[in-house]
Amino acid sequence: MKIAFTTSGDQLSSPLDSRFGRAPKFLVYDLEAETFSVIDNQQNLNAAQGAGIQSATTVAQSGAQALVTGHCGPKAFQVLRSAGVKVYNCDAPTVTEALQRYLSGKLPEAESSNVEGHWV
Image (tube, rainbow, N blue to C red; front, side, top):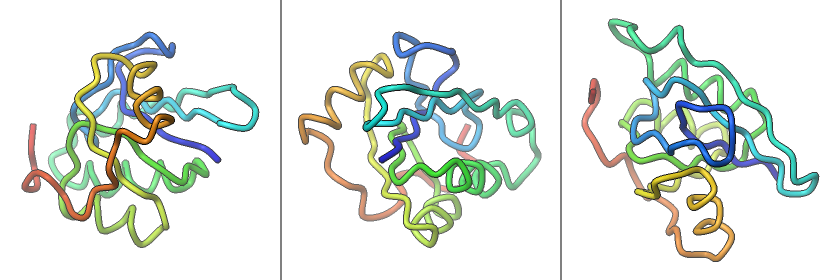
């Protein structure tokens, strides 16, 4: 199973970004292989609109079955849910800590978005 994390860095020790649609990067961690890849999301940082939908599409296409992020808006949440990607909101300072919280079952699955659209 793969889990996507919002981040601004290229390592597990990188900060977890609280934004979803405008996160600079997604770190996709493969639980079985214990490896990860990083997907650049720069095209959505300054998008006038649609950043969440485009980012949700990117995460779904990465093969991730779960997303750990600080905040997720309604349109992105809907796209992720339709693609079968579970969303988990987290305030961990790093991707490593967010991963540990996920693995220990300390992150409840989000039932809906937790911010309005166009949250910056």
